[in-house]
Image 1 (tube, rainbow, N blue to C red):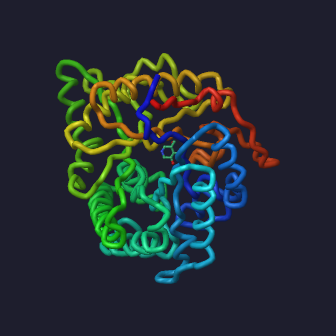
Image 2 (tube, rainbow, N blue to C red):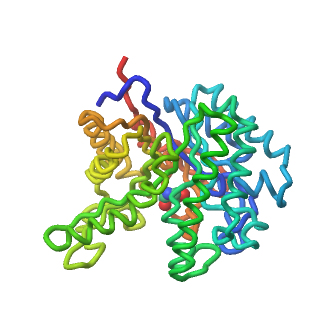
Length: 372
Ligand code: IFM
């Protein structure tokens, strides 16, 4: 498999899932505590990524560290992320920065979080500040991670903070997430016109035949396409997070064959990544796979998982889709939100007792060969 010369490849993480010591809107419900102590061990983690040959890394800046109280910037924490970014650059890795990976400062959650009609202003103010601070160091900004996933858990099912379920809350949160992205896009561009900005969109390959195909198209429109359509003129690239295939049979979702599943029961369906990439062709934007990964504690499926998905990404590129990068989720094991520390997504295993890092064999077989 050969990828274009400038292709970015590496792994991803998010602040709350790895840093440790964060108190945000999740903490009262699902406390990540020390997480992987990445806040103190980021150099060690980046050394590992470098030793694996990665040329890019995706991580998030934790809003609750930067603005712990409304309107107050924490210069010490800004400096911390400056050092983190420098550490990546020194190791030859391009930083891709996520500005909102599902967490909010507690003061903002108290004001209604994503249901606050002013949240787009709060968010764009934070994003603008980050662009001002880091415009010399960062090109790629991901404003929001998987907004539809967050809205459906937090405001529809109500199993994630702020655990507020209801159709109006769900629709209202989506509307504000769209507004938030647009406002953030404008704010970053004002500060840094050359910035490249997008979101990381969770994409599901919905499949159905006959009458089920109609439902599959509808689900595709609602889940995959609508948000991207609404921010169509406010993005330089599309970030794709791909984990799921959903086969619809007799008007019922989730009728997958599940022949091969991850430790948390997610079906492995690599060709779906090709299908979702194809479905994004019409936007005419560069695409980065901002997440793709598997929970596999025994590390018995991860190598094939990565190779198969990369094979379909390569096929998409050969078919003319402008895919420019791939980030495996995740560099290390980490705190998997409501599921805690059980699922093991990492290329690198974490011993949560000692915080020792152990590189899994699959990490060494994950290589993306670039054309000369
Ligand atoms: O861990 C999450 C990540 O934070 C967002 N995308 C899916 C991953 C696996 O569930």
